[in-house]
Length: 215
Length: 379
Image 1 (cartoon, one colour):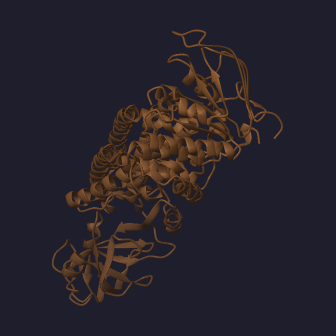
Image 2 (cartoon, one colour):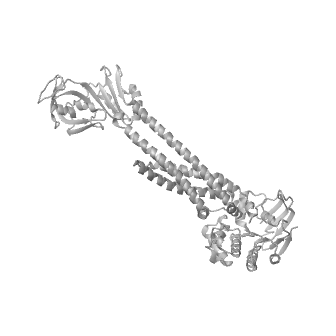
Image 3 (spheres, chains in turn brown, blue):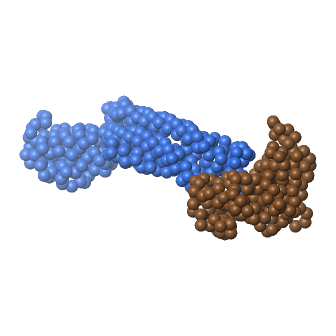
């Protein structure tokens, strides 16, 4: 891999009611690097993650993932990139409540062309790694917040993403579960992913290689 | 690998998601199945009963007497012959045809004798025929055997009058002399008049003055009559043509009207089904905004979301159609005693399933257009 995994240049974005939320942002994250994005509420941390996760189109600038320009891609290709290369961990796990935890985790690989069996096997392996394999058949509503967030982390990692985005991943967790989740995200970086974590937590920022401050 | 070349979801995985979704939203799934089932039941029941009634009526209207055409050469100038009978029999629309000669002088039992001035005891009319008298459903040999040329069979009434209960004997008339009678026949379905004659089998030289033609279907009657001018070798002189024309027209009208009724019921049901499925599906996707947003956030394309919604409808529609069609068919059998036409049930099923899919398309498009960010900002 030559060059950064994620390269952002002159990124600009604003909502209709909040114009100029992000102005000329430059950012570079190498493979294996984990960075924290910090700043006051409303400064655009989550919005930056949505831009990097290809959920939003920027008003200007460039976002390159493994050298490929993403801002000009079609909606379909952006979805495909998400399905294959980007893992996202939300503050609230964002699981399907009535679906078994195993299928919730495996869904992270479903849209990337994995077979059902391969996706489930990979999901189960990750769940075992994060201590929730025993809950595989439980529905998401039947597990605790910490267990749900670990499942969400597994879902983000199941497709072996090159970019992991986490939006306040420990915001709703007790210290023990928060530590497990941060450890998991760190492990993803150690495995070669570029990781961007939006957080208010100094503990999370401390686990990162560097911090980017948004005003 | 560039984004454009990355593989998408596998069909089996898509099916797995769809089935899991149907299980998760069990109540909505059951309501959709119920709606589809009821729609199919109503259409199969209505169309099936209409079809059964129509088939019964059409069967009644296809009675041989309503498919019969008699062509009478009143002046004896048309030049009908054995060849004309054969020519008519060769037509695809003709099931049976015979030619009859003029009614001969009164005949008597050759053994018993009797008066010659009228149908008194032992006296009947004698008539020559050409063609296969027994080749159709109208004349049946009751006893004895089929006659050779120059021999006769007696109609049931004629046999009684001649005193030929077993069908064997001889008849004597003033023109042909003595003719052997070798059997008794019964005539029915519009040719009952033949029962009163001793029917002598004629040959190639027999003069034919009346053609009796049984067509295969009542709808063939009018076209056949219209073509008579081309079919017969000569049409000189006045011809009397007798047929049940009004009933044939009624047959046509019945088939057309019943078909129009079926079509009206079917189109109405298709429209209503599509509308109901659309309403149900819109309700479902509104309830499932978060689910679809999450799927999009995990990499589902718009077309994957649309496929999920449409496939769900197709599966629910298929289940509803099978259940509704089966119940509808049972109802038709219970009400009419006739099983509905399987092709009709299958066609109704297919069309309703298609209506379910068509009804789901607007909802599928709406679900696919949802921006995942709407959901992500609430997570």
